[in-house]
Length: 558
Ligand code: DON
Image (tube, rainbow, N blue to C red; front, side, top):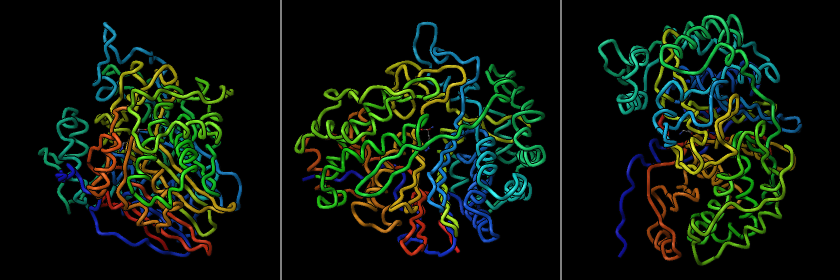
């Protein structure tokens, strides 16, 4: 008899949400109700999806300090309702000019983990303000000042904290309270956490946001805010200089494009690995009758886990910032390469990680995160994932500026073969270099059908972002689920190393037994991701699916 060991940690269903939110004119799905509300108001007032997305991005920086940010970076995918080719805005953080390949190793070449996670060296040059401003400039109708107004109001007047806000600050307290500016910003004068129902105000952040509203991106990358950031760095041995801040620029990129059973998949290109591997895994799985095998059956899960392993092995070898290294993108995402990989999958046996190594794609050609999705009445879609890496990033607040610094430098490979915080292995392609962007897994994705936007999705979750996003796409395309069911369904994850299938609560014990019989090591762990999605029906009806794995998630429309 199989003993059912209850999963540790957070269950999937924090809230009670089983039906999609339905609307006609506009839909916003974010991980915080207040951000959803201000973005929805922008749509109601005649703004477009880009206006609403940027407004949500700034509002989350106020209401959800654990991942919403101006001290981090991310990626935005934009697909217009006019059928034009989708575009990606890369506002990932960059390594400061003084960064070196060995900066996270000691004198004997050993990796010093904490250095890339909890010190001022952990911070990459933030990209969020420049990225959101660029999106607005290229595709929005609001001014930066208008898009910032709701965030400034929430920071200045305060908002009522939900339970999740208190819980987050309580659990991260040991690493946050070491920094006086963090303690002063996010805890009460007596050191207590704000309790559910308390009003939480952020005067220093209000002033920073106001400077951006007054002076545009210069209000962050130059002047007073830049001065506060560089002083913070100088006091604590950080590397970011005024020149680094001034040199920061977001990049407009072409998303990765693939197809899956007649749908067009657009997702994030390097410096994220997300789009590349979602397309690669889908290409491999396209050769199997997944719908017929059934959702979360042992046959389906076995094939998914085997395909995931192959993709993550390639990730470890080939992926990095394409401004610095050649990535064989066309090879990795080609149907022919997927076919070759598919041939190595055995239906009845899990191949141990030791039997798998990075493959040989065709030659090189030159070249606590949060996700939100928005669709407007013109059919424009925005899919945005941004982050400061860990919950509360490095834990370090810029004194006087009221925002947390990211610890994204940990996404670089500190040393070839040594895993990062998500257990991901990297090599030469992802070593630290001055000005380089660290490899990401963030996967803002837009799926089109017959040239029309169909599914807008993406998630936090570190290395699990890729597989989380993959499964929502498959749940819709292979298993015909409505968007809320697709979001809720229990998920699995395999990343080659460690050699285990990680599953959420809700996979049946007999399925687990069948997987174990094939040689998989199955580990039940806490919930993965928080995927905020929107599906667009043929008649234009909008269906929102917010992830119940975050109790503050919401999808609202009008
Ligand atoms: O860019 C990445 O892949 C990571 N820094 C994302 C971190 C993350 O999703 C944490 N959230 N749960």
